[in-house]
Image 1 (cartoon, helix red, strand yellow):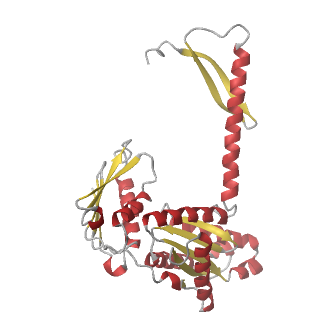
Image 2 (spheres, helix red, strand yellow):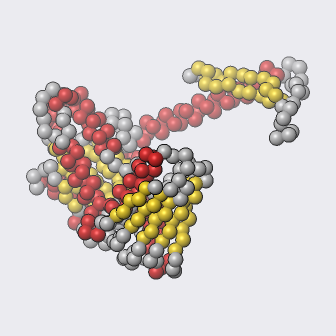
Amino acid sequence: EDALANWLVRYTAPIINTAGTVGELYFFGDGRDFPPGRKQRVTAQIAAYAASVIERVASLFALERVIWTDPLTGLVNRQCWLAKADEELARARRVHLPVSVVLIDLDGFKAINDYLGHAKGDEVLKRVGSAMRRRVRRYDVVARLGGDEFALLLPATPPSGAMVVAERMRNLIEEMDMSKILGCSVQLTASVGTATGPAAGETPDELLEAADRALREAKTSGKNRVVQDKGSQSVEEVAWSNVSLLFDTRLVRLFVNRICHEVNNPAQGILGLVELLLDDPDLELHMQAREDLKKIEELVLRLRDLTRKLANASHGELVKYAQEFAEMVRRMTPPEKARVIDDVN
């Protein structure tokens, strides 16, 4: 710092590319100048190089959005969903946690397109996609696979949790008022199929195929209902006798009492569960068990807040964070054992 104390801004140069002026380049110096005649040429060359790099990066980001995004709804597309599903299945194998898929198809949507026009149909798809995206966890993935078919990817979610989400989405669609969009009263419903890996499939395509079988059964058995793939019904779910979540501004503790040992390594499974919420370089997770990891009766997870992000968080943000965590725990808990305590300080 002492060496730089006497350095001053010697020159500035605008960074200009095809989008116009995108920034300004500052050159610092200690009082010595470029050799005569070189200043303008050197600054112009560096600014031109910076402009080309910025334009190239912007183009890559734009191309990525085109490749991975459904242009109509703004949701991720099939290609992106499959890539994310592949990542989550790999994580699931590593930490012994289930991954569920919810496949949703709008009932009678073809009639809307045929009789009211494709423009009205597109508005319906956009509204349905937006509504579903608002009703899932921040790390769940909602995609439009094509036509009127949507897919949800639910990490760390067993079959019972997938059924809860599927029924929530079916109710959401059924209760939507489309009269202002369509100009007439139309009852919109959806048929839904669910599948849970790795039992129902170890690859994204296999999981989608299993969910599609369940969806077809929902269609043929009367529509506007949720059906679970039969291969998912054999998945053993992790049982939690009592979970207490405590928050303060710098520490998050999760106490898990008498964990059911139906997984090979309960500690690893719980860590994988928590990692889904801690996809943040500023938050560092530490685990402490009172007994051997294979015989855990009480587990403490400590969250080190490297940049005091939680310390500066508002009470509402902490409450929202706790609620997201509690929702994930509920999905991992069989309904008859769902006794979850949320305590937010």
